[in-house]
Length: 76
Image 1 (spheres, rainbow, N blue to C red):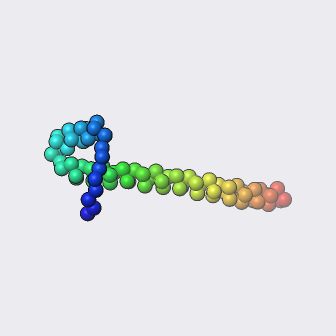
Image 2: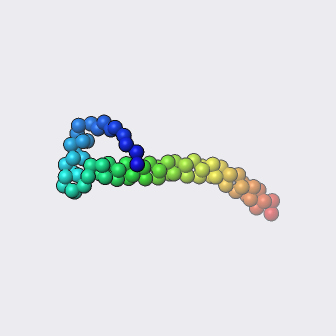
Image 3: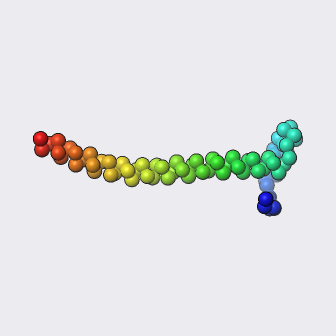
C-alpha cells in the first residue's frame, strides 16, 4: 500500500466527510473506492475511444472490399 499526501478542495472534503460519517466508512476506504471507480470509468472511456478509432479504420477497409465486390457484380 502506498502513502500519499492529498490536497482536496474544501467543498469536496466537506462532502466526503459528511458522506463517510453517514456511511460509517473510513475516509481512506472511501477515497480508495472513489479512485477505483474513477479508474474503471476512465478505462472504459479509453477503450471506447480506441474502439471508435479502430472501427473507423476498419470501415475504410470494408468500403474498399465492398467496392471490389461491386465491380465483380457489375461484370456479370
